[in-house]
Length: 311
Picture 1 (cartoon, helix red, strand yellow):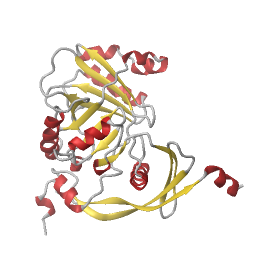
Picture 2 (cartoon, helix red, strand yellow):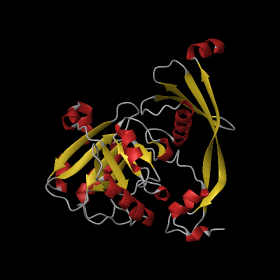
Picture 3 (cartoon, one colour):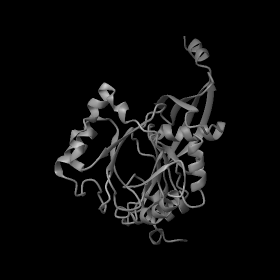
Picture 4 (cartoon, helix red, strand yellow):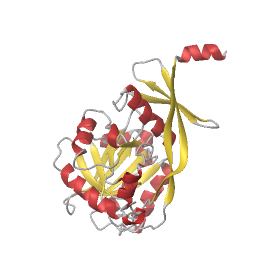
């Protein structure tokens, strides 16, 4: 039997059979800042950014719900202007905006909440397909090794804008990738499946084998989204629309509609605790029990018929 503590966290997760689906962070608003200096363990708080710039960016976290700051970088030192992106990962209308700044202090003149309120933000809209790869080695060694390898290969791909990024959650799933502005998380990406992940995304589809979830959904909805897509073979990003979520005594029910159909699907999932026990980080010796979600049922129904029966 393999000693769990002798494995890296990503090796332990894979060998334990831990599920990828339902593990994306819940994020709807992303703030991405190009920062080519060394990222310490807590990348943004420990960065050398001016204090007033940090305060300004932290203020955005209060102004936008379910928001997150990511440091990003290219393959080498920054040349010319710095990039600052704002991505809004809504279910059906994700948006990406790019600002060019000469210095970090230039961020102080960008009133993002006001730009969004007035609609002036659209002047900065861009059509890039951002792909972020976590290479944050100071946070976990698995991301340094697996993430760096995937990033090098990603730079060879056309049709996307590839960036290295700081911790995105779940380093035991390295290499981790996020597609923005859609907010699609992928894990256990490697040289063997990277081409499938990228080509699927460029077609507007999801590659289920590495799919962790959409960041606009709750954990339970991410799980149900995965099961419904797998059952119906609906891979288009916008093939599925969220309708409803409810916790019952023994299981959680989530309802999704399907593009072009009037049928609504109620997906039931159950969670089992402590069936997977792993180290969630390479720098921790603690072995934790990780809850796992399992398929319970999919029940299709016509909304009008259901309303009639309820009356």
